[in-house]
Image (cartoon, rainbow, N blue to C red; front, side, top):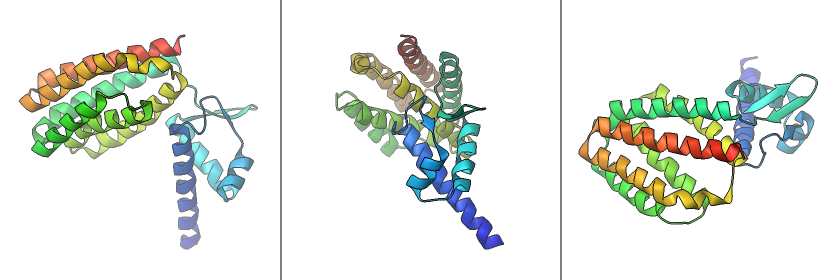
Length: 217
């Protein structure tokens, strides 16, 4: 009985990770309907782990289960984005307060490498990857496991919102964003917590406003 239970849990976890990655990578689009039978067939599993995984994703807000209508990839509202970015800002500032002293010389060297990479127009996917790494360095420095878990959960929601609000003018904001990132790294180099939190707030809320504007078009 214990062996069967563990196998079932692993199947649910594997399906959950596969579906979550499909949503975050935009393989499954916001608002897209999910067919449990089709998903089970494509993933080569029974219906049970697919249903379990969907329940997990619904708890995270990544999918929406509508009675008598079906299951759909979440389509975040402006309010969802506003709330998500407020929480993100609080978490990053907390990480800055707890972890600024833990950021190493090699971390700072990598932050400056990322600044250089982020100044280039190498495509939105590459840009977002480098941007995410820059912020992850700050988060990881806090050495706060629960903070990291909460932040990872938020990243999925932000990614969905960016997919839904995707537009071709993201590169137009590179110069402004680059200045914000430079201010963040400069504050870290000076070990100035107040300055770092102020720079993070300016950067995160500007990004939030830009994303909300694209969603409202």
